Each structure stands twice: as structure tokens, then as C-alpha cells.
Length: 213
Image (tube, rainbow, N blue to C red; front, side):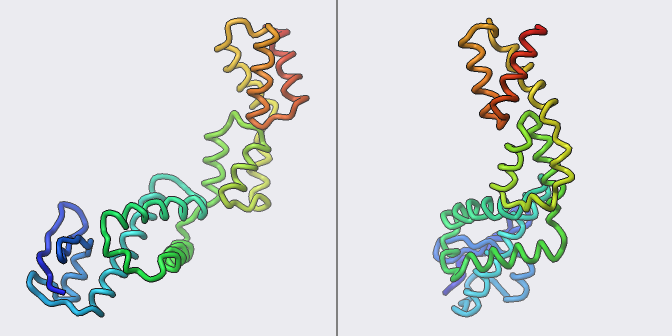
């Protein structure tokens, strides 16, 4: 296949242009494969370039995501797969990657070997972000995102359901015109239950806060 052109972007990537299709490449690849406009690139070298490009592009995206905030492996893989679906539209040559799941596994293994996953930080972040949820609701979220709960019992046990339910309820009550009405109490009760609090905890908290208001 003849290389139509090679363009440098303002950022990290260069673009190899082949029959009006773009392939993101690095300057190291330009040098290693002696790439230049008009060169007839072999099918073997093109296959290598496509696979290397797919790997580098995907891994850099993962590093970017981990730099934004701690993430569990399950969340990162889910985000990466979504990003890859966008890459396949933008760079059709990536359809030639034979086993995308194998590449994803390799990237995750590399990140793990480099100790770039800090699941404890992710657990702490999730607990802080969802401080108005019950402990059981937080556990459910962590399990949903692939976290082994038993490894982080000490962190999870720091969640104070009594404090959480009272803070959550107090904030919600402020938004209701007449919180003592039957309809309002039901709304408050349903709201707390959706946050993962037990029925008896919700009823007790509502009764106490309305009594003291």
C-alpha cells in the first residue's frame, strides 16, 4: 500500500495517510519503519503498525483516565471499550486488529505490573463522593465495579450510617414545603430507602428529625 502522506499533529501523534484513511503513529514508528510519502509499505509492516498504534493509543487513554482519578479495573476496561468503539469509527484501519480483547488484557496487565492501579484510593474516593449513601449501598456500588469488598472492610466500616442518614435527610427536608404531611413523609421515606437505608432506620430518622424541627 502506498503512503499518501505523513502529517505531524500539534500534539504527540503523527498521522499516516493511506488511501484517505488516517492511522495515528509515533515519531519512533516513523523512524523505525522508514516511513515517507510515496513509500510502498508492505502488508506485514502495515499490520504491525496498526497493532502497535492501537496498543499505544489505547494504553495512553488508560493512563490519562488513571491520571484523572483512581479507578477499578472494571471501570477502566468499560471506559476503554467505549473509547475503542469511537476509535473504530475515526480510524477504520483499527478494524484489522485481530483480537482487541487480548490487547485490552495486555494493557491492564502492564498497568498492574507498573502498580498504576490503586484500588484503595478508588474505594476511598467512592466513599467520599457518595457520603449520603448507606454503607450497604456503597458496598453494592463497589461490587458492581469489580471491587473485592473483603479487602477493604476497614475503609467501608468507617461509613457511619447514622451520620449519613441524618445529613441526607436534613438536606432533603429543606426542599419540602410541609415535611410533616403524610405525602411528604412518604416521599422522605422512599428517598432514604432508595439511598440504601433500612426501613426501620429511615422511619426512625424521619420521626426524630421532624419531632425536633
